[in-house]
Length: 119
Image (cartoon, rainbow, N blue to C red; front, side):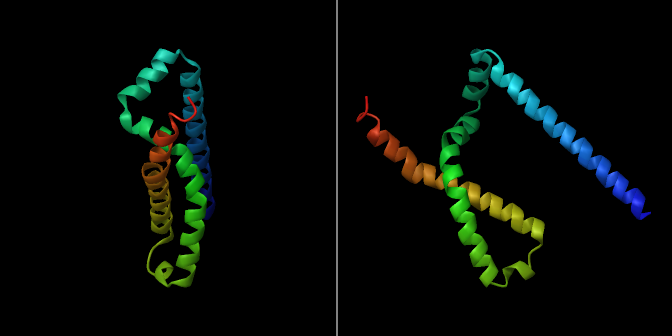
């Protein structure tokens, strides 16, 4: 019974990784397509464009934020009461949100002020 479960889990991991590689390949092909198709895809979806604009802030902020959050959680007893998956999802959401907040409050206003300086 245990061997069968392990085989099924292994098969699911292979299937998931195949789907992930397939999706990544789709994105590469989409990116290599004509610029009108790619541009049209993102222009119509303002949320994707916003996340793309905020991606550098998310990249810069997520690691320091997660570092502080993990240290905070290590010193509290919260981890005993919340399942690990829920903690992971919450930390991911908070790190993503902190990067977006940094983009809205710091990067975007700073870029708008500096935009005329280097033209």
